[in-house]
Length: 103
Image 1 (cartoon, one colour):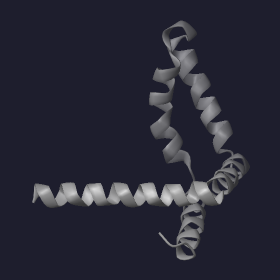
Image 2: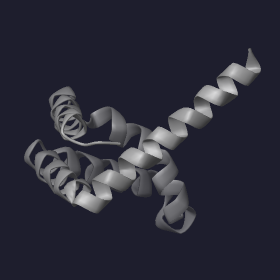
Image 3: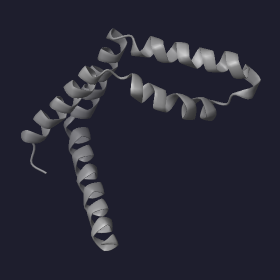
């Protein structure tokens, strides 16, 4: 059963790589990234995350927080703060792109 899981993981990784390549080649990845940036700013996500970062730095002290530590701590919070509507919109755009693209 482990071999089947390994094969599936490998196949999934190859498919993700192909999708990413098509997104990059077509310029769609940059368009999606820009759409995501705008939606996150509109919903206040960026401001929420910025405030969270400031709180962490205040609590731990500027001399006791590295950029890597800060990124590790805010990443889960940042993902959790993305509104479901934004996630759905992005997923829908990716599905639309894949429906019109030959892999």
